Amino acid sequence: MRVRPATTGDVDAITQLMNAHGTAVHGESEAAPTAVLEWLEDPELVIRLGERDGKLACYGDIMFSADGTRANLDIREHPDAPASAGPMLEELEAIANERGATKAWAFHASEERELAALVRARGYTPIRHSFRMLVRLDAAPEPAGWPEGTTVREMRESEQRATHAAGNEAFADHWEFEPTPYERFARWNFEGANFDRSLNFLALEGDEIAGICLCSMHWSGDPRYGWVGILGVRPPWRRRGIALALLLHSFAVFRERGCTRVGLGVDAESTTGALELYERAGMHVHRRQDTLEKLL
Image (cartoon, rainbow, N blue to C red; front, side, top):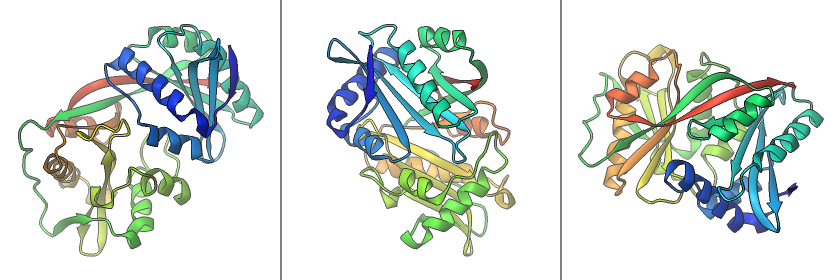
């Protein structure tokens, strides 16, 4: 298999591979061309493509941690190109080593048994797992209940840096936390075709940001699929029901817009009770993803 850098001319081929992979593994599409183009234009994301007989067989990318010491490896194999993930993993590890990373994380869905066996054979050890959770919006969600003195509204443009700071503070005590530089946070959350300011909510106590809920439509392009990208409450305001209220508020807004489902990702071993909170909001586990680590 020939492995090469990706270009913006590969948008359609990558989209087709991602969706073939997602349909085979999860029964649903994974990405729209607009999302793939944004990945290709991200200056920090390293993307490689594997080809067999002139056809795209495998996708791989690396996002380095902000300090450059950890390489996060994502590999998607076309269902018609078995065993293509091996050469891709070797290529991504070589790049990580060249750039000075000291460890690598690899990920696989619970259904990806061949990929799971491959990364373990390459010396990766399971360290964590996470869930993608989902709620169906067939019926109106429970009304949000706000603590006394707390209000909710859309984030204003002038509040983007304050929202970034609140997000870093909200997740500072989470597992393997690293502060996200504003430029990276803004690129992922406030820029791009999928950004919709009216889907970014702040819980306020006076002028203080107590919690944030940054949402968008899902990157698959499905107009009925909403996504909660970041939900966090700053420590002084925890245990007051603000996170649940923000989540229910987002569900109501998504339903008003015609969404039939909303998803989010969560650390399965979160110490803040996030998993239980999402279940109380009516969500259920839709997918499981394992994280594995290897020292380089």
